[in-house]
Length: 74
Image (tube, rainbow, N blue to C red; front, side, top):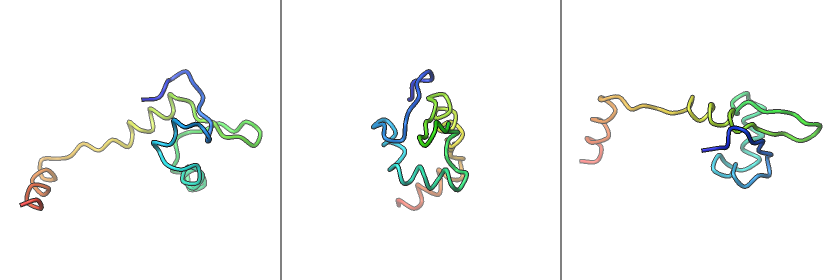
């Protein structure tokens, strides 16, 4: 999704998929954000860190969860 060799700053439009800059700041303060780099007062994320973070948050549904969703739809 993100270019592994690129740095993304908090005002980068590509980060909108993750949320608002204020959401990212909240995640950083709570230790839930992707790994980030402090450059003076600016914050940057490497594309590779963003991709790794997204992979780590991927949920694979189990068969039981799939059955529950079908039952809820019926």
